[in-house]
Length: 262
Ligand code: PTJ
Image (tube, rainbow, N blue to C red; front, side, top):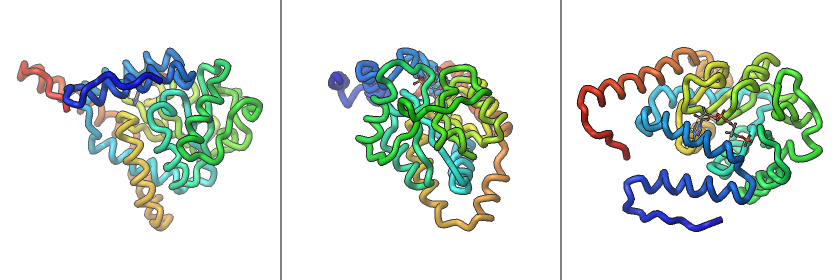
């Protein structure tokens, strides 16, 4: 992959570095070209959100960690964008919650599953489900290549983590009776609306918080985790995210001042 072309003093250095990481992963086949479009859409929502983890996103993160810890068969579904952006955190989250990692792609082009498996193994994963023939089961409720799943993983999971997801699979998994957790900067997306828990935050910020929250809650009693889950309301969390965006735009429009981003 090409080296970085951005100087530390650049006001958008971090954002540019992330873009370079993603474009580099087009070459390695980890990222689908459509992944670049998805990232651009996410960035636009992040600008409006203020590029910070909100209090309500933190509430969703706590509920998500508790849900994964309570699960019997949790699975973390990994696509190209997520592997490119936070492979290490995924491996750590799997360890902290006892979840299995499964590659599941919208664009199953030759070599991509293996490339993503490689990135996960380099990040420390000992087991990666869903690669090649291992994705031998079909989910009727899903109408894309994402229907191909591993019979040891998503097929039998009770809780599935599907960050940066693309629509109908979330609805399909929910119809199958699974609890679905997502990370999506767009609170209006079908996935955000249909998931059991939607973390409206950038995956790059949310993942380390999710890992530390899972580690913190690991020692908790079952009923304490259950209370954290039942206190959570996804409709309210989505409304809070939309309200944050709305009030930020209002404030900026009133001030007429340049947007201040970190
Ligand atoms: O690797 P594949 O083949 O499985 O494909 C993965 C993508 C992401 C290309 C595919 O799932 C897709 O097309 O997704 P969508 O429909 O573009 O939806 C992705 C959602 O993630 C959008 O609502 C974006 O706003 C959001 N998003 C993008 N980048 C981030 C994000 N949310 C959180 N953090 C981000 N960094």
